Image (cartoon, rainbow, N blue to C red; front, side):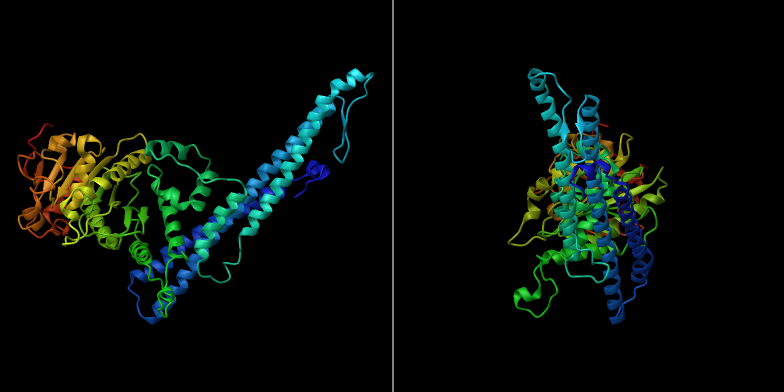
Length: 532
């Protein structure tokens, strides 16, 4: 890029703009190829149950292909962002130079091809003195334009030098993680700082819609962890960002391998890697899902027991949304089972003939208690529920914000200790859900349905007579059994069975939860006793 006056004066940036456009088009093509490969190649093969040594080798190769496509998408978009930024800054410098020269010439100054500016002839030293400030101003503006052009050129060159560009030849270990880091480093070189979305979901939604399409795309690709974890942003955006971040984290060089522990293997043994891989495998199993049953990864973390928030169907466009909160013993490695349950809930809602599309959400956005032991009796206290309640309220608020001004019907379903979290989040009417359903509840931290701050006839509870959790733990440390008439909620019919039987296909409990999600009337053992 030119730094001299004549070069900047004659500068034609058409080629830079065209190159930026083509790099962006390439990024989109690589994204499309990646999606099609998952849906039409690896997805069907996995669904067909292909296993064995040959299958392992083939899937390993195909995963490498998909990784290269995904990395290429990030790097191509990074090149586009760099070229587009350089184009904008060089154009501004070019325009500033021409504006300054034309203004000076209209006032009688002359400008040579090397940028030397000379004042018009004067008749005495007083006129010359009067010209000095104006002359100095023109010289400063020309120098500033040349300096800005040179700075833009140098920053663009340095930003592009960070990228490797050899990923399409052969996949390197940690190349995915490296691509994300390189993209952020390139933005730092250009002086484009990390975005700061508001923490309030409503403000975050407004912030997002105020960005340009280029900013939205670049923030998603270059800062996926930040964008993917922001409540209030569109589900499609969060899913895209979180899947990029998941793949980058699975390629994290910081994960310990067997060699770090003196074991002859390069396979990561870091528990975070195992957590993330279990999540990815659960998501991959739905790669061929038809429209309406596709998965949206709305949040995750690998530390500790891990967390995962996944929607089936787009919750932003669905008429009815059911959010399922699991209970004791659930970790990120339980995601596959959680997805099976929201799948069954969505099917049950479909049987109830809802007025529009249905999305169901698996929300393990909190640290659920472990199975009780002498060392850990977290299930007996409200601590885990109270700690997770603010995040759950923020998620529901964010879902509303992403849906826009139209009101969508949201049902929250808490099972086991998940009902305790729902109760904690809903106390005082702060949850924002239309209906609440709890099954197999050990208690909701409240003594009466009126404490939820919502109409009693929109609160439902179900309990099997053979459920040991309800039988032995309700009415103790977490609150009374919410199915009792004194509690005041509707009691729905459920089939007799164990603590997990509420989600058995075809049973009364599952069908009733489906009816409530769909906005229909369930079958009741007794109606709500509290105020409607």
